[in-house]
Amino acid sequence: MANYFQPEIETASREQIQQWQDERLVKQVKNVWDNVPFYRKRMEEAGLTPEDIKSTADLHKLPFVTKDDLRDNYPDGFRARPLADCVRIQSTSGTTGKRVIAYYTQHDIDLWDECCARALVAVGATNEDVVHVSYGYGLFTGGPGLNGGSHKLGSLTLPMSSGNTDRQIQFMTDLGSTVLCCTPSYAAYLAESINERGLRDQIKLKAGIFGAEAWTEEMRRDIENNLGIKAYDIYGLTEISGPGVSFECSEQTGMHINEDHFIAEVINPKTGEVLPDGEKGELVFTCITKEAFPLLRYRTRDICILSHKKCSCGRTHVKMTKPLGRSDDMLIVKGVNVFPSQIEAVLLNQGYPANYQIIVDRVNNSDTIEVMVEMTPEMFSDNVGDISNREKEIVAGLKAMLGIAVKVKLVDPKTIQRSEGKAVRIIDKRNLYQG
Ligand code: DLL
Image 1 (cartoon, rainbow, N blue to C red):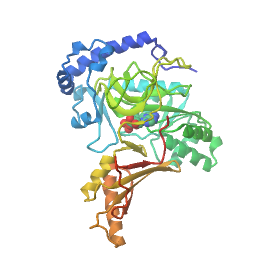
Image 2 (cartoon, protein in one colour):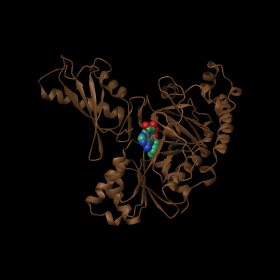
Image 3 (tube, rainbow, N blue to C red):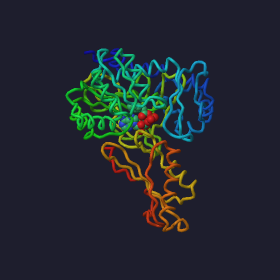
Protein backbone atom coordinates (compact mmCIF):
# COMPACT_ATOMS: atom_id res chain seq x y z
CA MET A 1 0.00 0.00 0.00
CA ALA A 2 1.41 3.36 -0.97
CA ASN A 3 1.67 5.61 2.02
CA TYR A 4 1.67 8.95 0.31
CA PHE A 5 0.32 10.40 -2.91
CA GLN A 6 3.27 12.80 -3.29
CA PRO A 7 5.95 11.47 -0.92
CA GLU A 8 8.60 14.05 -1.79
CA ILE A 9 6.19 16.84 -0.84
CA GLU A 10 4.30 15.24 2.03
CA THR A 11 7.47 14.20 3.88
CA ALA A 12 9.66 17.16 2.86
CA SER A 13 12.04 18.61 5.45
CA ARG A 14 11.00 21.70 7.40
CA GLU A 15 13.73 23.66 5.59
CA GLN A 16 12.33 22.59 2.23
CA ILE A 17 8.76 23.54 3.22
CA GLN A 18 10.04 26.87 4.50
CA GLN A 19 11.84 27.52 1.23
CA TRP A 20 8.73 26.74 -0.82
CA GLN A 21 6.64 29.01 1.36
CA ASP A 22 9.13 31.89 1.22
CA GLU A 23 9.49 31.78 -2.56
CA ARG A 24 5.83 31.28 -3.29
CA LEU A 25 4.65 33.97 -0.90
CA VAL A 26 6.87 36.60 -2.52
CA LYS A 27 5.55 35.61 -5.95
CA GLN A 28 1.95 35.61 -4.78
CA VAL A 29 2.21 39.06 -3.20
CA LYS A 30 3.49 40.47 -6.52
CA ASN A 31 0.66 38.69 -8.29
CA VAL A 32 -2.11 40.17 -6.15
CA TRP A 33 -0.49 43.62 -6.17
CA ASP A 34 -0.56 43.56 -9.96
CA ASN A 35 -3.93 41.90 -10.46
CA VAL A 36 -6.29 42.64 -7.56
CA PRO A 37 -6.94 46.35 -6.87
CA PHE A 38 -8.30 45.46 -3.42
CA TYR A 39 -4.90 44.16 -2.26
CA ARG A 40 -2.95 47.03 -3.77
CA LYS A 41 -5.21 49.51 -1.98
CA ARG A 42 -4.98 47.66 1.34
CA MET A 43 -1.22 47.35 1.09
CA GLU A 44 -0.84 50.99 0.17
CA GLU A 45 -2.98 51.95 3.17
CA ALA A 46 -0.64 49.90 5.34
CA GLY A 47 2.37 51.61 3.74
CA LEU A 48 3.52 48.40 2.05
CA THR A 49 4.85 47.56 -1.39
CA PRO A 50 5.59 44.02 -2.61
CA GLU A 51 9.30 44.61 -1.87
CA ASP A 52 8.44 44.71 1.86
CA ILE A 53 7.47 41.04 1.78
CA LYS A 54 10.72 39.13 1.40
CA SER A 55 9.77 35.88 3.16
CA THR A 56 7.21 34.35 5.51
CA ALA A 57 8.87 36.31 8.33
CA ASP A 58 7.16 39.37 6.80
CA LEU A 59 3.75 37.73 6.50
CA HIS A 60 2.45 39.40 9.66
CA LYS A 61 2.81 42.82 7.97
CA LEU A 62 0.04 42.02 5.51
CA PRO A 63 -3.50 43.07 6.45
CA PHE A 64 -6.11 40.37 7.13
CA VAL A 65 -8.90 39.58 4.70
CA THR A 66 -12.35 38.86 6.16
CA LYS A 67 -15.62 37.48 4.92
CA ASP A 68 -16.95 41.05 4.94
CA ASP A 69 -14.23 42.04 2.47
CA LEU A 70 -15.34 39.21 0.20
CA ARG A 71 -18.95 40.30 0.52
CA ASP A 72 -18.08 43.92 -0.24
CA ASN A 73 -16.30 42.79 -3.38
CA TYR A 74 -18.93 40.30 -4.55
CA PRO A 75 -18.98 38.73 -7.08
CA ASP A 76 -15.50 38.99 -8.60
CA GLY A 77 -13.49 41.70 -6.86
CA PHE A 78 -10.90 39.14 -5.74
CA ARG A 79 -10.51 37.42 -9.08
CA ALA A 80 -6.84 37.61 -10.04
CA ARG A 81 -7.06 36.11 -13.55
CA PRO A 82 -9.13 37.12 -16.60
CA LEU A 83 -12.31 35.16 -17.13
CA ALA A 84 -10.73 33.49 -20.15
CA ASP A 85 -8.29 31.72 -17.79
CA CYS A 86 -10.98 30.56 -15.35
CA VAL A 87 -12.68 27.21 -15.88
CA ARG A 88 -14.94 26.80 -12.82
CA ILE A 89 -16.59 28.49 -9.88
CA GLN A 90 -17.74 26.99 -6.61
CA SER A 91 -19.71 28.83 -3.99
CA THR A 92 -20.55 28.81 -0.31
CA SER A 93 -24.04 27.97 0.82
CA GLY A 94 -24.74 31.46 2.14
CA THR A 95 -27.41 33.56 0.47
CA THR A 96 -26.67 36.54 -1.75
CA GLY A 97 -25.29 38.79 0.95
CA LYS A 98 -22.97 36.19 2.41
CA ARG A 99 -22.27 34.10 -0.64
CA VAL A 100 -18.67 33.76 -1.72
CA ILE A 101 -17.83 32.92 -5.32
CA ALA A 102 -14.49 31.14 -5.65
CA TYR A 103 -12.89 31.05 -9.14
CA TYR A 104 -10.51 28.36 -10.36
CA THR A 105 -8.11 28.07 -13.27
CA GLN A 106 -7.37 24.57 -14.58
CA HIS A 107 -4.11 24.72 -12.63
CA ASP A 108 -6.04 25.56 -9.44
CA ILE A 109 -8.30 22.55 -10.00
CA ASP A 110 -5.28 20.30 -10.63
CA LEU A 111 -3.67 21.32 -7.33
CA TRP A 112 -6.96 20.99 -5.45
CA ASP A 113 -7.42 17.49 -6.88
CA GLU A 114 -3.92 16.61 -5.69
CA CYS A 115 -4.74 17.79 -2.17
CA CYS A 116 -7.81 15.56 -2.13
CA ALA A 117 -5.84 12.65 -3.59
CA ARG A 118 -3.35 13.05 -0.71
CA ALA A 119 -6.28 12.79 1.71
CA LEU A 120 -7.56 9.63 0.02
CA VAL A 121 -4.15 7.95 0.06
CA ALA A 122 -3.76 8.90 3.72
CA VAL A 123 -6.81 6.75 4.56
CA GLY A 124 -5.41 3.84 2.58
CA ALA A 125 -7.04 4.35 -0.82
CA THR A 126 -5.37 3.25 -4.06
CA ASN A 127 -6.46 2.99 -7.69
CA GLU A 128 -7.96 -0.40 -6.78
CA ASP A 129 -10.56 1.27 -4.58
CA VAL A 130 -14.15 2.21 -5.31
CA VAL A 131 -14.65 5.73 -3.97
CA HIS A 132 -18.26 6.52 -3.13
CA VAL A 133 -18.74 10.31 -3.04
CA SER A 134 -21.93 11.29 -1.23
CA TYR A 135 -21.04 14.92 -0.61
CA GLY A 136 -23.29 17.28 -2.53
CA TYR A 137 -22.25 18.12 -6.08
CA GLY A 138 -22.84 21.48 -7.69
CA LEU A 139 -21.82 24.76 -6.10
CA PHE A 140 -20.74 23.02 -2.87
CA THR A 141 -17.07 22.03 -2.95
CA GLY A 142 -17.48 18.65 -1.20
CA GLY A 143 -18.57 16.52 -4.18
CA PRO A 144 -16.34 18.10 -6.86
CA GLY A 145 -13.32 18.11 -4.51
CA LEU A 146 -13.32 14.45 -3.50
CA ASN A 147 -14.43 13.48 -7.01
CA GLY A 148 -11.37 15.22 -8.43
CA GLY A 149 -9.07 13.63 -5.87
CA SER A 150 -10.40 10.18 -6.61
CA HIS A 151 -9.93 10.66 -10.37
CA LYS A 152 -6.40 11.89 -9.83
CA LEU A 153 -5.65 8.76 -7.84
CA GLY A 154 -7.20 6.61 -10.55
CA SER A 155 -9.84 5.05 -8.30
CA LEU A 156 -13.25 4.15 -9.68
CA THR A 157 -15.35 7.15 -8.61
CA LEU A 158 -19.06 6.95 -7.87
CA PRO A 159 -20.46 10.50 -8.14
CA MET A 160 -23.48 9.72 -5.95
CA SER A 161 -24.07 13.19 -4.51
CA SER A 162 -26.16 13.38 -1.34
CA GLY A 163 -29.63 12.00 -0.64
CA ASN A 164 -31.60 9.02 -1.97
CA THR A 165 -30.37 6.65 0.69
CA ASP A 166 -31.80 3.52 -0.93
CA ARG A 167 -29.88 4.21 -4.10
CA GLN A 168 -26.70 4.94 -2.12
CA ILE A 169 -26.93 1.58 -0.39
CA GLN A 170 -27.74 -0.26 -3.59
CA PHE A 171 -24.66 1.12 -5.39
CA MET A 172 -22.59 0.46 -2.30
CA THR A 173 -23.54 -3.22 -2.26
CA ASP A 174 -23.70 -3.78 -6.06
CA LEU A 175 -20.43 -2.02 -6.89
CA GLY A 176 -18.55 -2.81 -3.70
CA SER A 177 -17.73 0.74 -2.58
CA THR A 178 -14.67 0.70 -0.33
CA VAL A 179 -14.17 4.35 0.62
CA LEU A 180 -17.08 6.57 1.62
CA CYS A 181 -16.87 10.37 1.39
CA CYS A 182 -19.69 12.40 2.96
CA THR A 183 -20.56 14.52 5.97
CA PRO A 184 -20.27 12.70 9.32
CA SER A 185 -23.98 13.13 9.96
CA TYR A 186 -24.83 11.51 6.64
CA ALA A 187 -22.34 8.71 7.37
CA ALA A 188 -24.08 8.06 10.69
CA TYR A 189 -27.46 8.04 8.95
CA LEU A 190 -26.22 5.69 6.22
CA ALA A 191 -24.77 3.38 8.88
CA GLU A 192 -28.08 3.27 10.66
CA SER A 193 -29.99 2.62 7.42
CA ILE A 194 -27.60 -0.16 6.35
CA ASN A 195 -27.94 -1.89 9.72
CA GLU A 196 -31.73 -1.49 9.74
CA ARG A 197 -31.88 -3.24 6.36
CA GLY A 198 -29.60 -6.00 7.64
CA LEU A 199 -27.09 -5.30 4.86
CA ARG A 200 -24.01 -4.72 6.96
CA ASP A 201 -22.31 -7.94 5.76
CA GLN A 202 -22.89 -7.00 2.13
CA ILE A 203 -20.96 -3.76 2.17
CA LYS A 204 -17.20 -3.67 1.60
CA LEU A 205 -16.41 -0.24 3.03
CA LYS A 206 -13.07 0.00 4.81
CA ALA A 207 -12.63 3.74 5.36
CA GLY A 208 -14.53 6.99 5.34
CA ILE A 209 -13.50 10.63 4.84
CA PHE A 210 -15.92 12.80 6.73
CA GLY A 211 -15.86 16.58 7.09
CA ALA A 212 -17.55 19.89 6.25
CA GLU A 213 -19.06 20.09 9.74
CA ALA A 214 -17.98 19.55 13.33
CA TRP A 215 -18.17 16.03 14.75
CA THR A 216 -17.13 14.48 18.02
CA GLU A 217 -14.89 11.55 18.94
CA GLU A 218 -18.04 9.72 20.15
CA MET A 219 -19.56 10.11 16.73
CA ARG A 220 -16.35 8.78 15.18
CA ARG A 221 -16.53 5.68 17.38
CA ASP A 222 -20.19 5.12 16.55
CA ILE A 223 -19.63 5.40 12.81
CA GLU A 224 -16.55 3.15 12.98
CA ASN A 225 -18.41 0.51 14.98
CA ASN A 226 -21.63 0.67 12.99
CA LEU A 227 -19.94 0.43 9.60
CA GLY A 228 -16.86 -1.57 10.59
CA ILE A 229 -14.55 1.06 9.06
CA LYS A 230 -11.92 3.61 10.02
CA ALA A 231 -13.37 7.14 9.99
CA TYR A 232 -11.10 10.07 9.11
CA ASP A 233 -11.60 13.80 9.29
CA ILE A 234 -11.05 16.23 6.42
CA TYR A 235 -11.20 20.01 6.58
CA GLY A 236 -11.48 22.85 4.14
CA LEU A 237 -13.45 25.88 3.09
CA THR A 238 -14.66 27.24 -0.20
CA GLU A 239 -12.63 30.43 0.14
CA ILE A 240 -9.35 28.48 0.31
CA SER A 241 -10.30 25.83 -2.32
CA GLY A 242 -12.63 23.34 -0.63
CA PRO A 243 -12.01 20.00 1.10
CA GLY A 244 -8.38 18.91 1.35
CA VAL A 245 -6.90 22.05 2.88
CA SER A 246 -6.02 19.58 5.63
CA PHE A 247 -6.69 15.89 6.24
CA GLU A 248 -6.23 13.21 8.83
CA CYS A 249 -3.65 10.43 8.59
CA SER A 250 -3.43 6.98 10.24
CA GLU A 251 -2.68 8.60 13.62
CA GLN A 252 -6.16 10.19 13.71
CA THR A 253 -4.94 12.98 15.95
CA GLY A 254 -5.42 16.11 13.91
CA MET A 255 -5.17 17.09 10.27
CA HIS A 256 -2.04 17.80 8.20
CA ILE A 257 -2.33 21.14 6.42
CA ASN A 258 -1.01 21.08 2.84
CA GLU A 259 1.70 23.60 3.61
CA ASP A 260 3.16 23.69 0.13
CA HIS A 261 -0.06 25.47 -0.89
CA PHE A 262 -1.39 27.13 2.27
CA ILE A 263 0.46 28.97 5.02
CA ALA A 264 -1.41 28.57 8.30
CA GLU A 265 -1.30 30.99 11.22
CA VAL A 266 -3.28 31.00 14.45
CA ILE A 267 -4.15 34.44 15.81
CA ASN A 268 -5.82 35.94 18.82
CA PRO A 269 -9.23 36.79 17.29
CA LYS A 270 -9.52 39.95 19.39
CA THR A 271 -6.08 41.48 18.84
CA GLY A 272 -4.87 39.82 15.63
CA GLU A 273 -1.62 38.83 17.37
CA VAL A 274 0.00 35.68 15.93
CA LEU A 275 0.07 32.87 18.51
CA PRO A 276 2.69 30.12 18.90
CA ASP A 277 2.17 26.38 18.42
CA GLY A 278 -0.08 24.86 21.09
CA GLU A 279 -2.16 27.99 21.68
CA LYS A 280 -5.80 28.11 20.76
CA GLY A 281 -6.91 30.81 18.35
CA GLU A 282 -8.41 31.65 14.99
CA LEU A 283 -7.01 29.92 11.94
CA VAL A 284 -5.77 32.19 9.15
CA PHE A 285 -4.72 30.98 5.70
CA THR A 286 -2.57 32.43 2.96
CA CYS A 287 -2.84 30.75 -0.44
CA ILE A 288 0.58 30.72 -2.07
CA THR A 289 -0.09 28.70 -5.22
CA LYS A 290 -3.61 29.66 -6.23
CA GLU A 291 -4.04 31.65 -9.43
CA ALA A 292 -7.67 32.73 -9.82
CA PHE A 293 -8.78 33.37 -6.24
CA PRO A 294 -5.75 33.80 -4.02
CA LEU A 295 -6.70 34.92 -0.53
CA LEU A 296 -3.94 36.24 1.70
CA ARG A 297 -4.24 36.08 5.49
CA TYR A 298 -7.89 35.04 5.27
CA ARG A 299 -9.58 34.81 8.66
CA THR A 300 -11.50 31.53 8.70
CA ARG A 301 -13.25 32.20 12.05
CA ASP A 302 -12.49 28.56 12.91
CA ILE A 303 -10.83 28.17 16.29
CA CYS A 304 -8.07 25.57 16.50
CA ILE A 305 -4.53 24.74 17.66
CA LEU A 306 -1.49 24.05 15.45
CA SER A 307 1.21 21.50 16.19
CA HIS A 308 4.57 20.83 14.53
CA LYS A 309 5.16 17.68 16.61
CA LYS A 310 6.55 14.72 14.69
CA CYS A 311 3.79 12.50 13.37
CA SER A 312 4.07 8.71 13.26
CA CYS A 313 2.73 8.67 9.68
CA GLY A 314 5.91 10.34 8.46
CA ARG A 315 4.22 13.43 7.08
CA THR A 316 6.01 16.61 8.05
CA HIS A 317 3.30 19.17 7.37
CA VAL A 318 1.89 21.01 10.38
CA LYS A 319 -1.20 19.55 12.02
CA MET A 320 -4.33 21.39 13.14
CA THR A 321 -6.81 20.11 15.69
CA LYS A 322 -10.40 19.65 14.64
CA PRO A 323 -12.08 23.06 14.75
CA LEU A 324 -12.86 23.67 18.44
CA GLY A 325 -15.41 26.42 17.84
CA ARG A 326 -15.97 29.57 15.82
CA SER A 327 -15.00 33.14 16.54
CA ASP A 328 -18.23 34.29 14.92
CA ASP A 329 -21.76 32.98 15.34
CA MET A 330 -22.00 30.92 12.16
CA LEU A 331 -23.86 27.62 12.58
CA ILE A 332 -23.60 24.68 10.23
CA VAL A 333 -27.04 23.07 10.03
CA LYS A 334 -27.63 20.15 7.67
CA GLY A 335 -24.36 21.10 6.02
CA VAL A 336 -25.58 24.64 5.32
CA ASN A 337 -23.79 27.65 6.79
CA VAL A 338 -26.34 29.71 8.71
CA PHE A 339 -25.76 33.13 10.25
CA PRO A 340 -28.25 34.33 12.91
CA SER A 341 -28.16 37.73 11.19
CA GLN A 342 -29.86 36.14 8.17
CA ILE A 343 -32.67 34.84 10.36
CA GLU A 344 -32.97 38.19 12.06
CA ALA A 345 -33.20 39.96 8.69
CA VAL A 346 -36.19 37.79 7.69
CA LEU A 347 -37.96 38.45 11.01
CA LEU A 348 -37.40 42.19 10.97
CA ASN A 349 -38.48 42.31 7.36
CA GLN A 350 -41.79 40.70 8.34
CA GLY A 351 -42.34 43.19 11.18
CA TYR A 352 -41.23 41.09 14.17
CA PRO A 353 -39.14 42.47 17.02
CA ALA A 354 -35.58 41.18 17.41
CA ASN A 355 -36.63 38.88 20.24
CA TYR A 356 -35.99 35.40 19.01
CA GLN A 357 -34.08 32.28 19.87
CA ILE A 358 -32.58 29.69 17.53
CA ILE A 359 -32.58 26.14 18.87
CA VAL A 360 -30.40 23.62 17.05
CA ASP A 361 -30.37 19.93 17.89
CA ARG A 362 -29.48 16.61 16.35
CA VAL A 363 -32.20 13.96 16.31
CA ASN A 364 -31.49 10.54 14.76
CA ASN A 365 -28.25 11.89 13.30
CA SER A 366 -30.06 14.66 11.51
CA ASP A 367 -29.87 18.35 12.42
CA THR A 368 -33.02 20.18 13.43
CA ILE A 369 -33.44 23.93 13.67
CA GLU A 370 -36.30 25.76 15.29
CA VAL A 371 -36.77 29.49 15.71
CA MET A 372 -38.90 30.82 18.54
CA VAL A 373 -40.18 34.27 17.65
CA GLU A 374 -41.88 36.69 19.96
CA MET A 375 -44.97 38.46 18.68
CA THR A 376 -45.61 42.11 19.41
CA PRO A 377 -48.63 42.78 21.68
CA GLU A 378 -50.50 43.99 18.55
CA MET A 379 -49.92 40.71 16.72
CA PHE A 380 -50.84 38.68 19.70
CA SER A 381 -54.15 37.06 18.96
CA ASP A 382 -56.09 34.10 20.19
CA ASN A 383 -57.00 33.31 16.66
CA VAL A 384 -55.01 30.12 16.03
CA GLY A 385 -55.47 30.27 12.25
CA ASP A 386 -53.91 33.68 12.22
CA ILE A 387 -50.90 32.49 14.17
CA SER A 388 -50.36 29.46 12.00
CA ASN A 389 -50.53 31.64 8.85
CA ARG A 390 -47.94 33.94 10.34
CA GLU A 391 -45.70 30.97 11.14
CA LYS A 392 -46.03 29.67 7.58
CA GLU A 393 -45.03 33.07 6.27
CA ILE A 394 -41.87 33.10 8.36
CA VAL A 395 -41.07 29.48 7.38
CA ALA A 396 -41.31 30.50 3.71
CA GLY A 397 -39.13 33.58 4.28
CA LEU A 398 -36.48 31.50 6.06
CA LYS A 399 -36.55 28.81 3.39
CA ALA A 400 -35.96 31.47 0.72
CA MET A 401 -33.13 33.00 2.72
CA LEU A 402 -31.34 29.86 3.92
CA GLY A 403 -32.44 27.13 1.55
CA ILE A 404 -33.33 24.75 4.39
CA ALA A 405 -36.52 23.98 6.27
CA VAL A 406 -36.71 25.75 9.63
CA LYS A 407 -39.42 25.07 12.18
CA VAL A 408 -40.99 28.26 13.51
CA LYS A 409 -42.88 28.79 16.71
CA LEU A 410 -44.52 32.11 17.55
CA VAL A 411 -44.64 32.81 21.25
CA ASP A 412 -46.44 35.34 23.42
CA PRO A 413 -44.94 38.80 23.97
CA LYS A 414 -42.23 38.91 26.63
CA THR A 415 -41.78 35.13 26.91
CA ILE A 416 -38.24 34.92 25.56
CA GLN A 417 -35.88 35.53 28.41
CA ARG A 418 -34.16 38.92 28.32
CA SER A 419 -30.46 39.01 28.93
CA GLU A 420 -28.54 41.57 30.90
CA GLY A 421 -25.54 41.13 28.69
CA LYS A 422 -25.37 39.69 25.22
CA ALA A 423 -28.68 38.26 24.07
CA VAL A 424 -28.69 34.46 24.02
CA ARG A 425 -29.79 33.94 20.46
CA ILE A 426 -28.50 30.43 19.87
CA ILE A 427 -29.04 27.29 21.87
CA ASP A 428 -27.00 24.57 20.22
CA LYS A 429 -27.79 21.31 21.96
CA ARG A 430 -25.50 19.27 19.71
CA ASN A 431 -22.31 19.99 21.70
CA LEU A 432 -20.18 19.35 18.65
CA TYR A 433 -17.14 21.29 19.61
CA GLN A 434 -14.87 19.71 22.17
CA GLY A 435 -11.62 20.82 23.72
O1 DLL B 1 -17.40 22.57 4.04
C1 DLL B 1 -15.60 22.25 2.47
C2 DLL B 1 -15.55 20.79 2.81
C3 DLL B 1 -16.27 19.88 2.06
C4 DLL B 1 -14.74 20.33 3.83
C5 DLL B 1 -16.19 18.53 2.35
C6 DLL B 1 -14.64 18.99 4.12
C7 DLL B 1 -15.39 18.09 3.37
P1 DLL B 1 -17.75 25.47 3.30
O2 DLL B 1 -19.12 25.06 2.93
O3 DLL B 1 -17.20 26.73 2.73
O4 DLL B 1 -16.70 24.37 2.83
O5 DLL B 1 -17.67 25.51 4.87
C8 DLL B 1 -16.43 25.76 5.51
O6 DLL B 1 -17.09 24.38 7.38
O7 DLL B 1 -14.89 27.13 7.90
C9 DLL B 1 -15.60 25.10 9.06
O8 DLL B 1 -16.28 25.96 9.94
C10 DLL B 1 -16.53 23.99 8.61
N1 DLL B 1 -15.79 22.72 8.43
C11 DLL B 1 -15.26 22.23 7.30
N2 DLL B 1 -14.66 21.03 7.54
C12 DLL B 1 -14.81 20.78 8.87
C13 DLL B 1 -14.40 19.74 9.74
C14 DLL B 1 -16.66 23.04 3.21
N3 DLL B 1 -13.75 18.66 9.31
C15 DLL B 1 -16.59 25.68 7.01
N4 DLL B 1 -14.75 19.85 11.07
C16 DLL B 1 -15.28 25.80 7.75
C17 DLL B 1 -15.42 20.92 11.53
C18 DLL B 1 -15.53 21.88 9.44
N5 DLL B 1 -15.83 21.94 10.76
